[in-house]
Amino acid sequence: MSENSKLTSSFNLFFMKPQTSLLIIGGGILGAATAYYFKRDNPDKEVVVYERNEICSGNTSLAAALLSRVRAYKHVIPLSLETYRVIPELESVTGSTLPVLYNGAIHIASDSKSEKNLENMMSAASEYGIDWDYISEKKSQQLVPWLNCSSASRIAYIPGEAVTDAYLLGTLFANAAKKLGVKFFRNQEALSILISDKRVSGIKTNKSIHEAEITILAAGAWSVEMAFKIGIQLPMAPVRSQYWITQPSSDTFPKNSPSVIIPSAGFYSRPQGDSLLFGLREPNPLAIDARTLPSEINDFIFSYDEGFSDLISSYEKIVPFFPGFGDARIKNYVAGFSCYTPDNQFIAGKVNGIEGLLVLTGCSGAGISIAGGIGLGIACLAANKENPFDFSHYSATRFGPIDPFSKEHIEKCAAARSGKTSG
Ligand SMILES: Cc1cc2nc3c(=O)[nH]c(=O)nc-3n(C[C@H](O)[C@H](O)[C@H](O)COP(=O)(O)OP(=O)(O)OC[C@H]3O[C@@H](n4cnc5c(N)ncnc54)[C@H](O)[C@@H]3O)c2cc1C
Image (cartoon, helix red, strand yellow):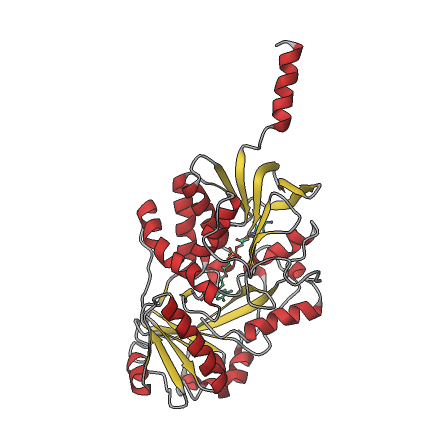
């Protein structure tokens, strides 16, 4: 090779784009969904996902998996509608079937505030063509035998709402992405994000350096610390979500009965086989400094009493609606961390002033139901295409400079979970 051609080839190497177009940190449902959509719509581009444990073994594997479409914020509804739309598409790509139960949902208002919220939610549902109706106390008890709605002022029933298994939905996205050619690096950790002159060029892993045109930080609750190391203060904190599953009783808890959401009692439930899965939005949920998270979520001790003290303190609020609450025998307790922001909105998109990086987190306890829309939207942004969804509420810098590890910020995130009114 002549000196000239040697020079040209090193020049090309220097300016060559990295082979990987999109690198995603985090193989939870949000990382997997993004990988699927990006590869589907950009089949010639290389997409890789780094997951330090097993795919969807983080908080995704713990979710109660209510696929609520009707939510307090209207702009979130289309994100969940996309999840419903994409499930048959993923089944057809993978040849596997996802267990989805279209059991419907009942939302109960019992004071003027929750009634107003319910009216707003139902009017948004109508705008999106979602079928619903106000129902009587008698009808609600026919649908849900354990429920007593005598103190309710409004009861809305949405027959098309569904529940699923969150781990299976997350891995369905991942398996569909794999089928299309996405490479998943399991048990490989992103140690740091490479940044120079406000441009992200990839990551350093526990094995090598991997460069990419675009990097997406979708590492769930662990995103806060990774982002902080490159000067980004993500406005969220890990806040505990917990639920319990009763012993089976097919008469009291029929397997197809609707999910129930009672904001004034901080209570939600769904059927789980012949058992009832129910969760609380307690007034003071456990919220932590993200730097104290272990790398494996199951290593975190959430509660020595399996949330029993929270059950006791919510008892008075729940028992008018669920008179048999005190007699329900508990079979399982599950807890994990959702990433709450002070305003209950997600974090999705570019971070002002930094090129080559997108963030996708701050799921505010809704990451399973919105995975389709938010994954598609972020994949469009990564490909420099028009985003079909409204992400205007999801900017990472919407609160200005914050200290994501301060007590004050963490308390605001915990309060956001307590004040949540939808599924
Ligand atoms: C108890 C509970 C109940 C819930 N119920 C519902 C519900 O009913 N409906 C609903 O929609 N949502 C629900 N959620 C919320 C839902 O689980 C989350 O919104 C969703 O799982 C978030 O997905 P994720 O991909 O952002 O996070 P995760 O699933 O936590 O994935 C992040 C991944 O990143 C990986 N990672 C972290 N750091 C690195 C690194 N440095 N390198 C490589 N990989 C890394 C982690 O190992 C992890 O697998 C619930 C959550 C909990 C805890």
